[in-house]
Length: 151
Length: 151
DNA sequence: CTGAAGAGCGTGCACGGAGCACGCTTATGG
DNA sequence: CCATAAGCGTGCTCCGTGCACGCTCTTCAG
Image (cartoon, rainbow over all chains, first blue to last red):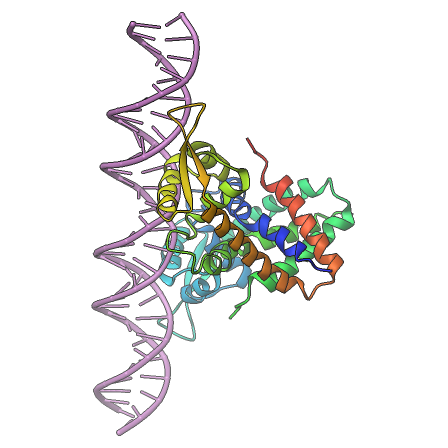
């Protein structure tokens, strides 16, 4: 019987632990040495772009929960660092598409690898089946519970 | 065999999904109607205080990854709303201890309940054993991988 | 074909969170 | 008893964020 135990325990963990993680653990060591243009502010733009493919600033902003103007400014910095470029939308000449450069793709892949390495290091102490089940459950949970409004 | 699959998949989920969640989902509806003093900025202070008990602003700031000054300012707002009070440290007369008021305790409990309710609603579609296992695994994971430096 | 309305983008402006440095109070050790 | 250090709060500054405006281009009605 669900005495709401599972949800309560998750709530306890998600409160601000996850927040602290998002800041210090992930962004801190994740973006270290990858240039001053990449920090916890620009990271969501780069990561969101890598996740969903080339999009306009407005569309990307809607997807990652930021204003178009913010995305545009961060895109400026990332563009200056060569991680991203703007391509004119062939279907609409007033629109620009944000596209990762090859360097940008490499940087994203590098960050993903770092993060995965860190997580794997901790999961190494777990039974393999349990780790795999956790990864699958987390994915499902984030998809269902945390991303309710995908376009 | 761990082809580093679990860590990679977790990394993909943690990138910025969790960030979006921390902002929109949790803080948005979580603090709705609980007064203007409680928002995504002051929430970590209140939650961290509830988690670790009465502490000085410096200590709390260290624990939740914020500067003492920021904690102090947010504590001002929360104190003004009656959710928190400052008590002189009996052992050190220059130090103040941040302590939740009864109202503060109630508000934290209410937020926890809301969050738990939301998570339970999504977990309701899951097999009970799987949900329980996920909650336990998440707790263990946050403890081990995300909070490496507790005092 | 043409002109008006609307969409998409970038930027000036203002607000607020976050960190640093300073001054004040109090503890501590010589 | 005095000097040094620790703890706290606050002024100052920086920067991320959102809103509003102007511009360009698309779209559609007449």
